[in-house]
Amino acid sequence: MVINEVLANSQSPRIDPIELLNTSRVPANISGWYLTDDRHQPVKYRIPDDTFLSPGGFWTTTEKAFAATAQETNAFHLSRHGDEISFFAADLSGAWLGYCHGFKFGASETNTSGADM
Image (cartoon, rainbow, N blue to C red):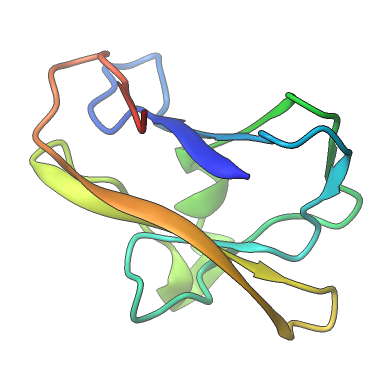
């Protein structure tokens, strides 16, 4: 599982998305995993229950979800000037599974996504 693509400088009506890719040959259950813009604070946006990716499949969430006021102090936005994005694998009880992936990225042009290749 990897973070495949990030758009951090969208122009309305577009909304900043984060896309995950299942690089394995088996289905992946990512229910309860966490997305964050700060590796030192991994528990930010929790991926909803019953989120499964087929082999080679994609899952996308947008700023509408990870920046929602319901997230309270865990809400985050991606900066067009550069930022970082990571995910941490956890089970449904919140216990860490020992896998994470992420990267830092630089400034981005409007409506141009960056991919971690």
